[in-house]
Length: 350
Ligand SMILES: Nc1ncnc2c1ncn2[C@@H]1O[C@H](COP(=O)(O)OP(=O)(O)O)[C@@H](O)[C@H]1O
Ligand SMILES: [Mg+2]
Image 1: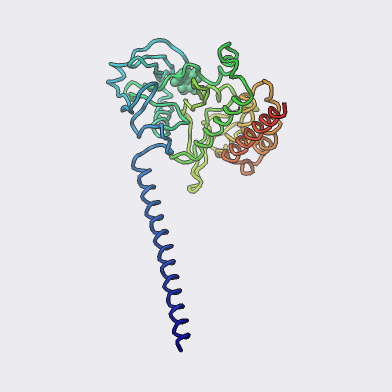
Image 2: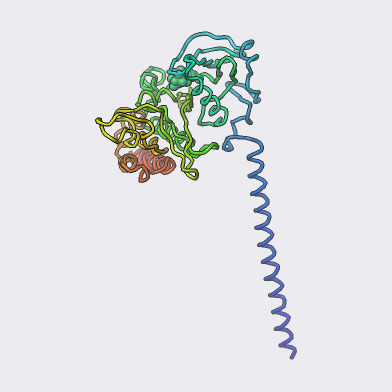
């Protein structure tokens, strides 16, 4: 009887313990849920871009040696505080001047072709929304006189990459490691655009290699940032919305096959009949850009060999079969880690 009583008491305390355990798990789950909802909310309300610690809140910037974030300059600030020094670049839409603001170098861009105002304003809207470590820092803008002020990068666009690496003071940086890091940066930027806070964006200003290279800037610490965001249409799969890179026919062997007019030379191009496409056009172009970035230094061909399979995937005719930018990025990072390990192993052997 006493034993039965004891067993009953034991069972009772086990049940009590089990109940306590369930309660504990339930409380932990609840706390996690509350924390998750709170953090989600905090992320949205502060407006920090993708949690980058160095990026200021929306509407603010920090460049050079600035300690604190400062609000974007307005028309008045641009007119009174910015001194234009010299023309440093020109594309289809803007003229870009090296300028000075509070003893810091900045780039002042002016719209040059009034008929391209929509592209200019689209670019400005994208710059405002996509501030992050992947995009050039916006310093201010004035819509009235179509001006944009950004951080100045003295090494200029990616078009100058080989010339820059050939300068005596930078030759020591011209290694397969640094070049592969640039390719990693490039694919990171494409990945960021494909999963941007605004949705899936396609880098349409990319009909040939030179055009692509002119849209990215090389920073003084040899990283890449996207600069020209004038042609970034949105893919919205849920609404069945795809894109076309401009209303005119595009040709050449750089662009993806689905961007070519599909009805042959005998049928005149008609934009209404041109089928739209998605962000996988950017994926098609990655092997060509990476090939340029890897250049011809000792070791670049070994990197090319290791990237061969993933690049073959990028060149699949069917866009849906091409990998995502994230998958390519993972492969690039794996190859970098593998080759660095091999390098350190071979050094140890010596
Ligand atoms: N912030 C900058 N720092 C240094 N050079 C720049 C900067 N912004 C633009 N440039 C130069 O100006 C060129 C044209 O700029 P971009 O914004 O691409 O104009 P567009 O829209 O007319 O193509 C770039 O390729 C680059 O050489
Ligand atoms: Mg450009």
